[in-house]
Length: 162
Image 1: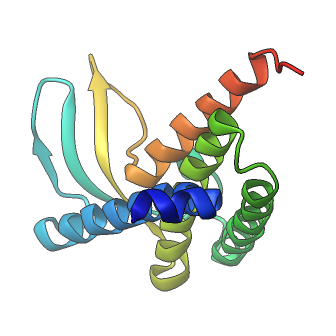
Image 2: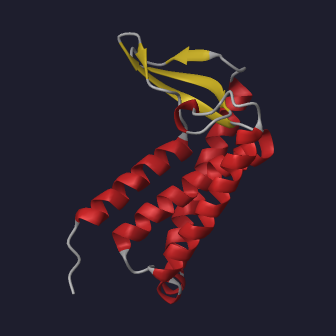
Image 3: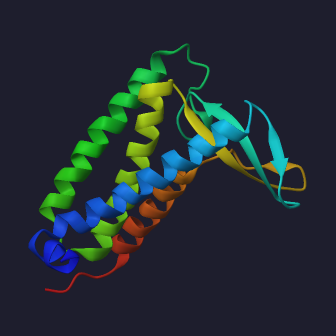
């Protein structure tokens, strides 16, 4: 039955991937909010901690201290980008690598959009570090966006036939 559904609507396959990312992202953020207070850290390994941080900016906390206007700006950017990605998915559903990259980016964008629209910030909880140098904390949505952009870059380097 699922195979028949996907063959009739190839777009549904890509939207399902996005939906799974949103669900996993929101669930892991919920678990983080239940288990940790803001700023709390649990050391897992010599290079990885679980934390609870609130990012009011964009990637790497860009514009986090901008006074509040950035919430609406990044909410609008995420919403517009999501609509554009939906358009591209609808237009190119049979381009597998391209659509996979878009689906990953869409799922991540929607996960962070939900946080930003409902909380005013994005919950980050994955923290990697080496020799006292810390990578900015991130979440499942950020990971999906990063992998999705990587897939899109890979797709752009593959020669299209025909």
